[in-house]
Length: 359
Image 1: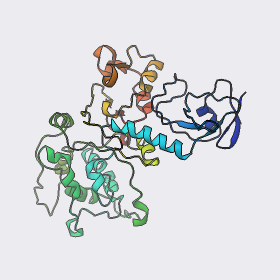
Image 2 (image 1 turned 45 degrees about the vertical axis):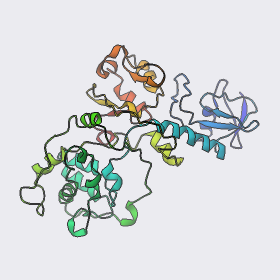
Image 3 (image 1 turned 180 degrees about the horizontal axis):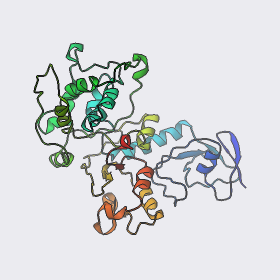
């Protein structure tokens, strides 16, 4: 068994082991996006770069062999900068919102899209708890002076009128169980996390994002704005939300590492951004190609589960993408492996229709 040193810690690795495997045996974390245990090495993301101390060469830890006497460093400034560059390149072609525009500008940090979904599902007490998980549980009460910046940036403005977020927030807070204690102001707002942003939608993107969304105009409370929404009115207004936020904001590794390494989305800004796409041809999941990093993990996962069709890389060069062979829908490509594919995908490209908050 070869002996090597990683971050000044000696270890022995089995023959054929990689630097990544040796590091993990020591409890040293090296970020990866395209690696999955038991699958063929792909070496696509280059986020796992480490430094060979003797030469200063940068090596992908997922494929570099753990050899006798080698000395590896995993956290030097050069390594961190190389990982930042790799993440920046991946983000330059990434298209999607981590958080909805409304949530990004909310001064109280409310997860507005989740609150609206809870209202739409009739889970009113839960909607109230989402709204109250902020420094000001009644921040959308006009008496508190809320200017509703969420409504100014709501993407529904690009279609007709913004969703009545302020009224929905007031409605949700009014459904809190008796005796609910608001959280401590000091405990609620943490550091802002990395957020990918799409920007203004093109016409074809508007039509796609409106699929499954209620096209009705903004609901006016029958009893007047001061009285607020009745339950049926709130549910109808909630149905107007375009669901701009990602369905995997907590488990997306690309978002996590972008935050940890302080990467800016526009570090390598493309001349023209790609077009937003969403494949809904599977009853349980959605696929957004703009969030795919081409790691191939989904291809391997589907094959490992014995899918007759599965997934594959289609196209060439910059047009390469993931799809079901012969142009078949996702429902035929993922007949038994949908859960495994969603869980293995390192980004929000493959996600449950209802999002991870529904699982």
